[in-house]
Amino acid sequence: MAGFNADKLGERLDELNREQLAAIEKLSEDLLTEMQRKGPIRAGDDERDTAVETGAKKRSARR
Image (cartoon, rainbow, N blue to C red; front, side, top):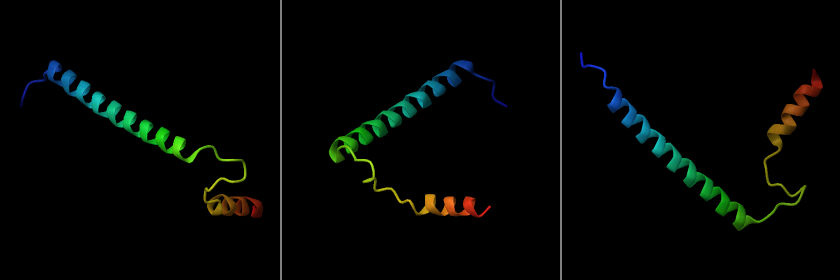
């Protein structure tokens, strides 16, 4: 069995952290770009699918 190498583990964890940070930064930039492109949404003009929310409200009302 190979011995435990704390330095190698630390390097790998640093590498994973950098990869995760890069992915989060890219997603954040993409989201910001999309939000700037679409502009603000007025109350009531939200394009979300409310069918799921409506169904949940109906189920809770029946109880």
